[in-house]
Image: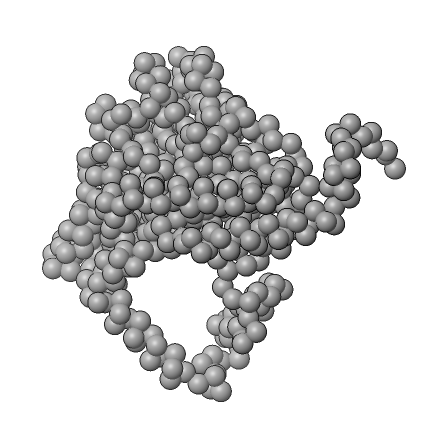
Length: 457
């Protein structure tokens, strides 16, 4: 109801707005932003932005980058923006009490989804902060006895950068390789553990290729050697069943905006028995048991809690539906194109992430050609780089094929019609680019281009 009222107010405001009357002073920053060429320009012929002209808003198939907020989540959040806006740490009046109650309810909702106690949930700004607290916080706390950390070559950039930061401080880091399917070798993990190993950090579901690591087996190995186990579960939460007891994790990083919740909110699971300790990475008022100081943003926390509760109810249905859509997408492309490779294991994979490489096609050209489909070539956190994906290179994918990869992200609100349209546009663009490729012409003529000795000029 609150969202309908807000939408009605916005409509009235926009209807009454007169473009002839400037709302900004000419010298204001707001005026400069409003006139910025980077803002989307929309008219009857379509939308123009960043030099790209498209007929309308593109199909959204980039769910690993972020997911849309579920309208039911927004409905749960709005009262805490409009009327129940108290600081949850205010202990002397109703506004603070009701916000505090909402935060604790959300804490219970997040905990229930992963089989944890609400007392083990710390709210943060997102999975990146949770990863930083876990990796730096554990190693700094146990620095006197533990100087070694184990992770994999295919982790999220924030994990790898945190590890490099520790290396600069004198810690030893082992970066385990993965197989061509993206799965870590458990024997290599076991042999890498040392007496001074302070943490093992392995992502549950990979953000670029959707591969599901054997986290339960990793947890057993860590328990055997009495080494804390951290997993980045940002892409796993609400998509695959999570049980912190079965997984034997000591720390788990979670994100709100990957599960149809708001951006800017995440959580960190910290085991209480046996207790894991971390050194806080931020100083302040001591909120969240002193682990993460700063005012807890009640509306965002409520949104994450609501998203977790919905995921718990609808995970099985979502999984069946998304699996069917993934098969429809892959079968549709394979039926019309050859030279299409799925990156990562198909057996151990979250179905909403389909990473494909298209032989004899340049990836950037393909992305630009698919302007009516919102997809990416890898992690949103590294998409500005022209280098091939480090995740695909770790799988042993050839550089030319790594450059041609496209990640299709399917989610709760994706429709069959959108999948069919994505197949049609992808096939059209790949065929168009291959027609312009001399390499593809040579392959069609039966020439093995890998055996060609290219001359140097």
